[in-house]
Length: 475
Image 1 (cartoon, rainbow, N blue to C red):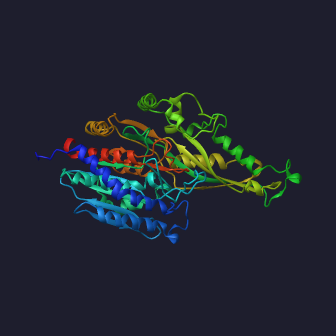
Image 2: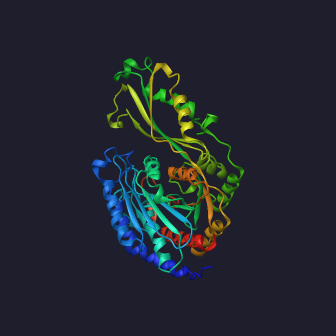
Image 3: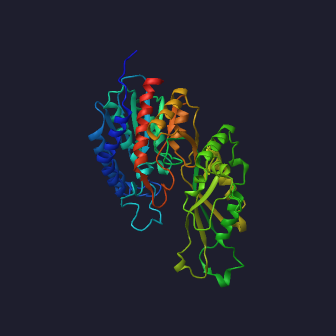
């Protein structure tokens, strides 16, 4: 039995806070300035070079701050986004894999005055700009959490920090790299992912499920060219109306419910009970933190149902459109086609490829008026449900939250998607998972005014350190 040095938790937090201020925030500020959009949103990403700029930024920083005896590997296969792996040798048994990504969502309209996606702004201890919270901070926070433990001579297992660059596109390059780098990655016993959300900024949150995602464009062509609406309306159907008809096959426009039972799953009773605990803790914050217009409100007053809708039920969003001129350019023309981009979130345990096949048949068969229906799909992403927590990990999470936030940790399902988690769950079925992140209320990943809540990020980094320490001490 080895004798370990007792960790000073107050010293740990102070060192992490100072490291964030001095070493992390200046670099994240520069990271935000780089418009390194994920390949799905920038087809010319290789020629533009922004991804290389971000990888160089991260590489230089990691080389300056990596733990002693660790080694940084950068992979860049032809036609694929880069991958960074930091291998930190350990002094005790087991392997921890820490995950994050560097690619970003596109700009999005609607940023408040003085804010923008590529111009970092520090205001009220929040760093505004695209990608800081989702989740450019991950590589820096991971190394901070390790170094703070190293500074106290805490005995650690082997730690692998894996940072990809195509997550926002559905991680299409990751399966290749997981195989290509399998010997280097090894077989993790614990996975810590820093790309998820938080119900508030007052305690540590873990994510117990993630929904899957099917992204596609749906195009309806009815005419070869646009014609005067006065001479054609009432004779030729509107391509926009045909799309409305097709979407009604999928979605109830009154309730937002996805109609086909083939896209639903039975929600486990223990997840419903988990949601009830979350609703008890958050109350109206389940919906009130969204940026509602003055008289608008949620789909239902039942807060449990709202959370289940967001975490375990399929839901549809229309996120883009083509063929529609700007309002100022909209003449009285019956347009020849309409294209919309759909984002269909599916339940955590629904197979995405099966769901995609069903969706394609549902929307393309028996086209109204013989219209030409075409669909193009992005890489489908299956969701993920966490395995039960081992007793040592459950206790470590609670102890960390109590030590740092002075409140117990809580668990939540997440409405978003992290394709890597499903991939890891299948590849390493015996691994334990801590899925967490800084995307709390109004952090607004993917939308305007995204921000990184700096005090919360510092505390989360300290919690991660404490969980890592417990891996060798209590497992």
